[in-house]
Image (cartoon, rainbow, N blue to C red):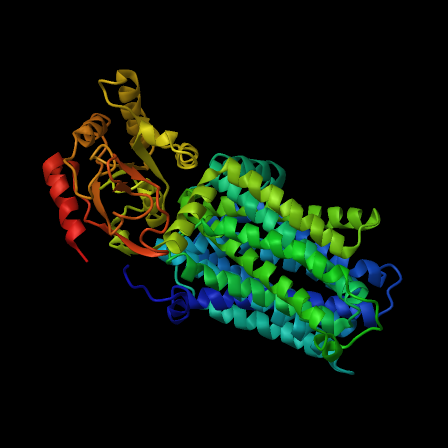
Length: 637
C-alpha cells in the first residue's frame, strides 16, 4: 500500500487549513449565538408572546427556514463563482449580522435577535454548498474521506464549544449580554481573517444563468440530483442520518430530566458524549477505509446506530425514580455509564455512516453541478429534520416515553437502511468486500493507485478462488462489473452476491453461442458507460494453483471498444497467497479438486495480497504478453 500522510497533516496545508478553521469558526458562532439567545429568553427575560416552552422551537425553525428557501440559489452561486470569493463574502456578511445581534443582546431586543437567527440561517445556507463543493477541488480522491472526516469532526466540536461558551457567557452576572455580543463579533472577525487565506477554487460552471425563483430552482435541483441514482439515494441516506440525530439531540433535555433524573449539567454531558462520538467516528473513517472512499462502512454504521439505539431503550427503561441529581451523583451510578456508552457508540457509528456518503456524493457528482447537488442535500436535510420534530412530537403526544421514541428510531433506522441497501446494492457489496478483506483475510495491496479513478478500463487478474471478485471490489475505489463463468452463479450465497453485483455470466461459445455473444455485448456497454470491467482471462478457477493460459476474450473486448472509439487501458493484477485457502480448490484423495471444504484449513485471518501493475494501452496487449505481466506480478513480494 502506498503511504499517505494522515488526515491531520491536512491542517498544515494551505489548501485545507484556512477552510477548516473558517467553517469551524462559523459553526461555533452559529451555536454560541443561538444557545445564548435560547438561554436568555428561557431563563432571563419574560416575553409574553414567546414563552420558554416555544423559544427553542421558534429559534430552530427560523434557523432552518432559509435552508428551504435559499439552498437552491446558494448552490447556483457556488457553481457559478469562485468558491473562495463566496466564502469571503459570506464571512463578511456574518460580521454585519453579528454586529446587529450584538446590539440586540445589549438592548435585550428579542425581535431583532429573532431576525438575526433567520439571517444566520441564511449565512449557513450560503456556506453549505461551498463547504462540501470546495473539498473535491482542493483534495485528491484518496484524501476525500479524511478531509470529510476532519470537517465533520470539526463541525461537531465547534457546535459543542459554541453551545458551552454561549451558555456560560450569557449567565455572567451583569455583563453576560455584552460579553456574548463581543464574543459573537470577535468569532465572526476571526472567521473572516481565516477566509482571506483560503486559496482560489475556480468556478465549475461560470456560464450558468442563475434562476432566482427558489421554488422552481429547488424542484430543478431535486430532479438534477435524482438523475444519478447512487448520488440521490446517498442524499436520502444522509438526510435520514440527520433525522436520526435530530431525534436524539432534541430529546436530550427531557431525557436528562425525566428519565435520568439529572439537572442541566447532565443534559450538557449527554451533548458532549454525543458530539465526541460523532467526531471519533468521523476521524475513524480514514483508518478503516485505507484512505479511499469506502462506502462499505455505511452498512457498518447503520448496524451500530440501530444496535445501540435499541440498547439505549433497555438501558434507560429500568432506571429507578430518584431526586434530581447533579453531575457527580449521576456519574457515581454504574447504570448511567451504560447509557453514556450507548450514546457514544451510536453517535460514533453515525459518524462512520455519514462521512463515506458525503465523500461518495462529492466523488460521483458531476463537477459542474456539484454545488447544486449539495444544495439539494441541504434541502432534504432540512425537510427530514422538520419531519423528525413532527414525528417525535406525535409519538410523545400519543403516549410514547422518550426511551420508546429512541427504540422506535433504532428499529426505523434498521428498516430504512435495509431498504436503501437493497435499492443501492453497491453499499452492501462494498460492506461484504470490506469484511472479507479485513476479518476473513489480512489483505495487503500494492499499487492500488494504478486503478483508474475515472474513465473505462479493463482489469485483468488471475483466477484463484471463488472470492477473487470480492477482493478486487475491496481494492477498487470504484464499482467493478465482472465478466464471470456462468457456473459460479450456481454456488449458494456467492451466486446471489454476484447477481446483486450485476456480474455478467459468460458461457463457452460451443455450449451457448447466444449467451456468449450477449456477455460481450454487455461488456461493451460497461466500457461505453465509462465504468470498470473485471475479467479472469484463464476462463476458470485454477485447479493446481498455477497460472493457466489466457484465452482470447480480452482481445474481443478491446476490439469492440476500438470500434466504439474508446481508448481503454488494461490493468494487469495478481492475487497472491490465496491458493490453498477455503475458497480455492483443493484436491481430495480419489476425487476432483473442490473448494469450500475443510474450513480454516490455513487458519483464521490468513495473509493474502493483490499486486496491481501499470496500465497498458490496448495496442500493447496480447494474451501471452498479458499473461507474462500477471506472472511477473505474482513473483513480487
